[in-house]
Length: 322
Image (cartoon, rainbow, N blue to C red; front, top):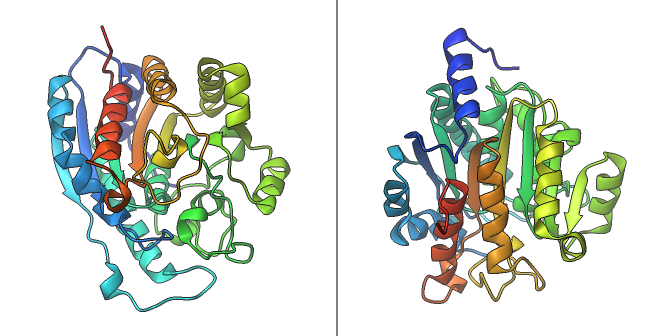
């Protein structure tokens, strides 16, 4: 478990109290992770730069926030990695990138700055959560995704690591947070919430039930409404936690809204549901970090998905219609 010195703890407490919707000036650090080897098809590695080109830094400035830095994590490309047909594909590369992301996120959090991680495929979340658990003793996680990402190397049909990221965070996979030096405890399943699920393997369903992971499918959202779901998610993720991380996979949206993703699944969130969800999260003043992943420009149309990603980040950072 990571050690908390007094100065760092004070900065974390201040960051949590201020909240993202605060009118006070806030500091944000952008951490770009151009990594796509954890996904099923190439292109996610282009996501971070696409989000920047779509106007992310301009939106941050318009909100009166201070962009303290824009860091680019060095990531191997397909051309640099050997062909890997193992049950956990490109495990060496995922481990390498996870350690680098962990170090950057940990450094940013230690400085009292809000980390905004841009993927890349969803395997980058392993490093993000590792860096966060170095500072938060009980991290809550809200996971927006069409998929549960709870597969392990033994049960995965594809071997793609972006489908194992939550399993790694919970300590269930061959590569998990315990393998990264200096990292804190695993994510507590009682403080983990999945939102937007609609493509879940049978093994993942078993894991959700066995570990009591609070999960809201699109059926739940259709039936109860996005406001109720978000309120429940914050209550669960925030119970006894000292920070809440938002991990937002763009494939939680319907492909008509976000065509440029790695693994699109019909029947997802619409434009207003997604914005309202992030507006609600911002208004709670509880979100202490965010990552947005799986923007894939190779399958996008006129940068539509990247621009939507920027808009959603802005909503989480406090942007309002009026």
